[in-house]
Length: 96
Image 1 (cartoon, rainbow, N blue to C red):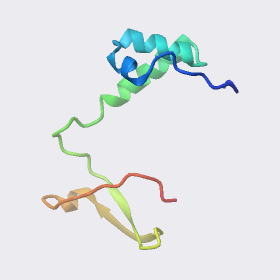
Image 2: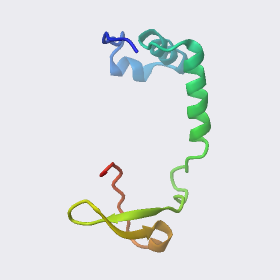
Image 3: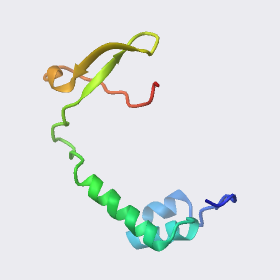
């Protein structure tokens, strides 16, 4: 990785208005990875997204640790499917 900071040649508004090929060119211009590495990364991202639930679909079941007031694990867990038909708020982050 380069020690220099690369400034984007476009602002966020310009980037948002670009088609995929334009965004790809910007990424390759400001990145220190090769075109092959970029394409490999994008293919992996696309494959990963295919398994993500769509808006309105049921979330996959999972088990989460319950944290105490001190943000430490209590040894208890909760399973998402056990909360069906109850309001659920999820906070994603790392507390370890």
